[in-house]
Amino acid sequence: NAGVTQTPKFRVLKTGQSMTLLCAQDMNHEYMYWYRQDPGMGLRLIHYSVGEGTTAKGEVPDGYNVSRLKKQNFLLGLESAAPSQTSVYFCASSWDKVSYEQYFGPGTRLTVT
Amino acid sequence: DAKTTQPNSMESNEEEPVHLPCNHSTISGTDYIHWYRQLPSQGPEYVIHGLTSNVNNRMASLAIAEDRKSSTLILHRATLRDAAVYYCILDSNYQLIWGAGTKLIIKP
Image (cartoon, rainbow over all chains, first blue to last red; front, top):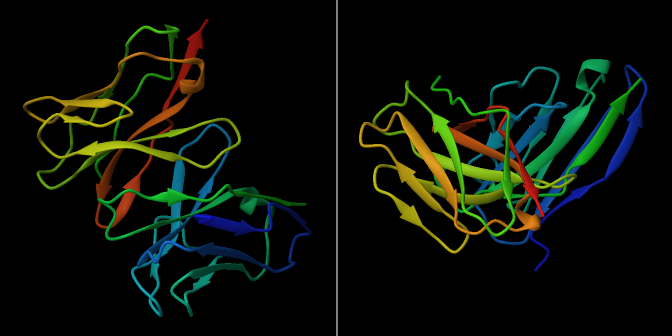
């Protein structure tokens, strides 16, 4: 039982490049989330999904897109990376709505130069 | 959005209890209070959550004020492995609103 896994662990992009972060969970959770964490700050919600085929915007969605084609996977895309998107990205999942325990992945450290 | 206020850092001695305070004066009646912690270079980890009554689990206890405008996370016997950033969080409309948290330093 791997829990929540994230791919890749590290990535360096040049401004304007695109990439996709993959999150996978093997707990059959309905809810999945993408967060970003900047140095010395708490997490901020980018997008979330309440089930397969659904997505919704969080607190800071601009510049990101997401897809949830399979229940176990939640993809985060950056179409044209900017230096302001340099951050650590965390994926999480939960059984039900936000009032339930969220399980987090190990994070992806992204640097945009 | 409802927000929380926590001290930037706290120190405690190993094997002593730790009380981590959190103020949330703008909390609404349906907002749950969540606590997560984040060890260095790791993803956050759930600690405990509650709505009105005090809560206990194997990791900690959560004491919620009667007016719900503040709460306290209690670690009954801190160890070096409890050194982390502790976040007090409210949920609002499917979102957890995170603050900067309290960095807990454990002295051996």
